[in-house]
Length: 253
Image 1 (cartoon, rainbow, N blue to C red):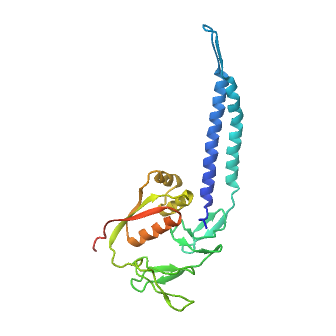
Image 2 (image 1 turned 30 degrees about the vertical axis):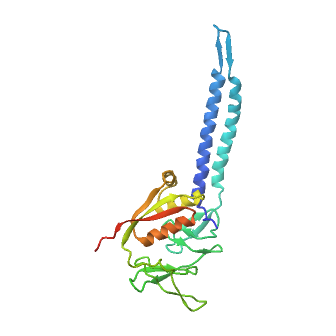
Image 3 (image 1 turned 180 degrees about the vertical axis):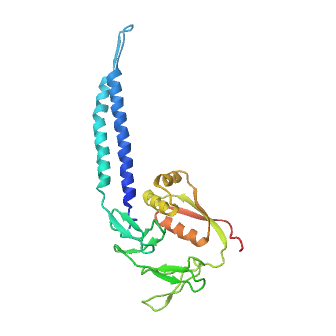
């Protein structure tokens, strides 16, 4: 399933089109009037008569059509449906164009909110037994790694009664390196990647689009391995490709 679209982003796209088509309408009207006014050119010396006024009529006819489409896109922005979703972690309200059917990232706390069949799941706080850090889990959580110390927090599988474990190599306690996250390919789902980067970097739509035109681009630097892995996985779920690159070691306290 695709990531639900934020209503503000959809409205912004509508207005981008409305402004663009309005500008084209103005240019078409002005160019048509100029050709109509100055399109007849006569040169008495050589008995030359050049008439370009016929070119003005298609431009003048296209202008109201362009304006009409611009008005249509502007009105469409007001008719977009609205669905308010509440973040399970921080209770921040987000407005989408439809009820989310899949997980989405909160604008406020930047956590992925779990969703099953259109229902936003509640999350439960779990304290890490190693460092005391607070972590969260929901019904969808299969494995849990502490966000503070990167150690695995054991979870009991209610169906089998056995402990579920993180695949080997994901939970780390000895990696003190610092990483940078580099976007190398935006993939085909450009809109989903733009939405993910807006949430991740707290940038506006135009800033993100400018970044995508200059790949490879460094998104974040000086982050730990766990955060780099989480953000990289988030981008990959949107169809993009990001690389984690070591830049140094965490300074000793």
